[in-house]
Length: 183
Image (cartoon, rainbow, N blue to C red; front, top):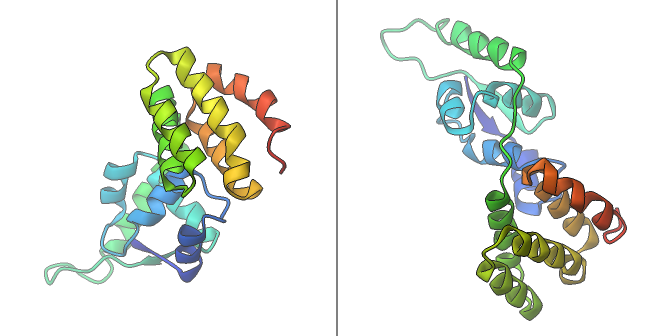
């Protein structure tokens, strides 16, 4: 099976308005109809098959049969697609969390903003070295983001940041940010 994006997926990727986490967005980008499930699993991780199923059910992907080689029969792709799907759903997935990943994500978001305040926050966050200063910089940037973008976008950025922050640091973000950004 070689999943490919639907019009809904293209719209979601362009508008940043879909309720997708970073890994789902990354998988949608990679699903171009050219890569099959084993290739996607190598790029995204063991949970790729389960995420493909979720995205197909949500209407973001459609499954296209793998291109058959002249030596294979037309029914050969069906067992290949069934095997990874059943193994991907059974295995629980533990996501990697990292302060570095959170910092890089927020630097990318700030870089996309066309505002002098965002540029100043970008440079300040880029220059910090200690973990405590990184946490302070992340807090400062998240608190300023609603004034630079829409509140809905700022909330989605906050939620995605909480997905990659180590749990010890994420706990410190949730209470302070809950009141700062309206849902």
